[in-house]
Image (tube, rainbow over all chains, first blue to last red; front, side, top):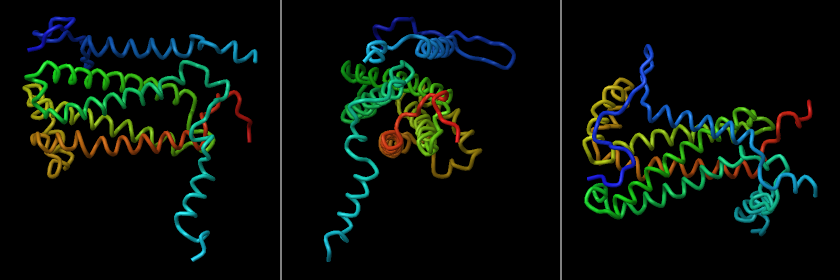
Amino acid sequence: MLVGALFPLNHLGHYLHWHFINVSVANTTVMILMIAVFVAAVALPFPGRRERKGK
Amino acid sequence: MNVEQQWTTRLRKRAVATLPPQKLLPDTQPAYVSSWVYVFGVATLASLIIVIGTGCILAIGGPSWWHNSSIGNFCNSLHMWSVEIFFFAMVVHLWGKFAMAAWRGGRAMTWMTGVVTFLVSIVTAFTGYLSQSNFDSQWISTQAKDGINATGAGGFFNVLNMGQMLMWHIVLLPLVAVLLTVVHVVLVRIKGVVPPIETEVAP
């Protein structure tokens, strides 16, 4: 028995359906998160970068 | 026999010449490495260590341990979530390296070992789904068998055989994945981290 799950897991998953594309909401969330993390990794400054440049 | 002719001497000299200690374990990196996009390779490595560690603990208890033990269930969750982070970090690492064209400067083997490690990791994860010893793994195996049989691999890779899939998942595939990872990291150390495209000097 699974206890302590954040979401109720005892039902069918939610799916997004568009033409032949059929993808779960959970997987879509992960994909959006990955793209967001990638964009953030490229855009955000790395801590200590300016100090190292100054040396 | 001359000491210089011994295979151990020749191998040591060649290893040290190819990968001197300061390159194997460097204390500094070029300035362009201070970017978040360079973090995902080591994040993949860190999560791989957790995956292997939790997998070893699960191996002690056996494939059905996590069904009847709260500690087993906890280790199973650690294993599953570290795999999620492993793939998450590996794919972002792949996007970053693809955008940098990281195969430049004689780094084709580094790129290819990374690609093959990615593919081996996917097969390892699939065999993990088949090793859950629950209705989910039974369902997945019956769905997978037709696809595998269509490739002709079903003769020696039977997804309905839970024991065989478990052995592939905990012995053969992790061995290949870890060996390829070691080769990949050593190649990164030998060739160095790929510089940004704009800093490359035209030939």
